Image (cartoon, helix red, strand yellow):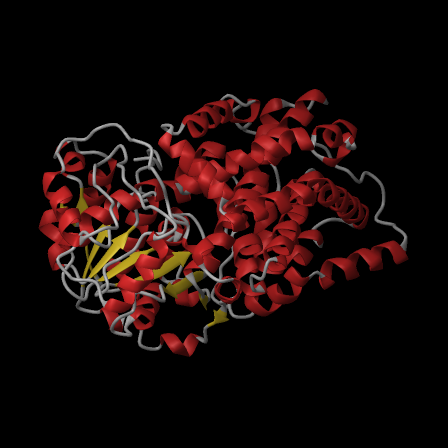
Length: 577
């Protein structure tokens, strides 16, 4: 795609590309939404292919090759980019949106991230419009309805992209290559291309025109929560980065900071990072604790309660709203705060269960992190893209048929404390998943601050989505990449925990574990408390939460969730549209 432009490549960029192309051919293909040729030969050849590309859509074809940017780096550069992480002082955002104030911001993609980021940016004073495919406008698809229904100017790529100062690519990952390849020739000289996830750059090796600035502003949660936290006067932690080979004017960091301020991220904490660090940490977090562990835990805990004779409606409600209630304590007080909500015998039981779970699941977490770092995960997922999402669609259908998904939550009242008292196993699963994900991310060179946001802090924001409409809602609002990774983890973790679930104490979920007094062995309790507080995720978490003085508590339960759902501006359909 870098050749699909009227601008001649610089000698420096030409040498870099020649070195890359000598060993790796680049993409030639299309996706289901549009066809565009990707070539890395001569600008004239690329332009000719673009001019000859048919206007009609055709089925996706397998891409002949992709270049993993991370794997082209030297070991030193890999370590350098993985370790990029600087917690930015709040005063660095005193200029607010100044760097993009008065600029024309065009967003491509009006799903959960696209719409909700745009709403925040508009409320912050930005000039925002949406560029959509002609077919989406003609057929009044969800993206068009979302944009028009919220009062935004909408138009085609041809109508809006050429005048844009910033083009925000907020489409699903699988569409990035086709979308960027199509809009890049339309972008004016010196414009900025922005992402909220760097998969296209890091895992697919997208090369962008030399004159364009490429930045990333990545809120660490689903799009719906980006909006909800903003409306509460807060925000969500955000990673920002500038692609090192695309900052010709040196304006990338200032624009990324302004973009983060416009979405409210500066109120919760911003990390100056890299495309590589964001992608590798984001993939690990979403596959394991953020989505995969919550899905696996939901299905296993529900089936376990059914086998033990717990009322189905009660079990469904305990899980659907229990993750949110339990992790709300996690958000404000870390693992320490979550565990402190349990009485002493329950705390010790949860601690022991979490240690056992960590022993069983650690090899799975190691494998996920290894596959993410090597690129094996991305290659497997992109092969599934090329096969028409065969595995993704199969796993999505299987999830919809689980007993938990099909059983409505009961109408009985469950108090806040009851979610903890009757959910000791769920607490243990959260603790084990957060600690394992954090440990594996830092083990490969990611900074503790980044690992914290991608494991502990984002978990309650994902749990909020389950409280709305169970696993359907979670998998609907997360990215297509996160959804695929969630299912991949779930497919491996459920059989891995089969023996554990058969042997686990039935009183650890669905009923009150401790029916006696609060007495325990003081030495065991002190040792458990010390181990909880000494874990590195707690050490860095205590510091980072200190910067989040504006963070508000969220009311949990069915009624509170219904009220929040009624206020969503986004129309939920599918993250694949």
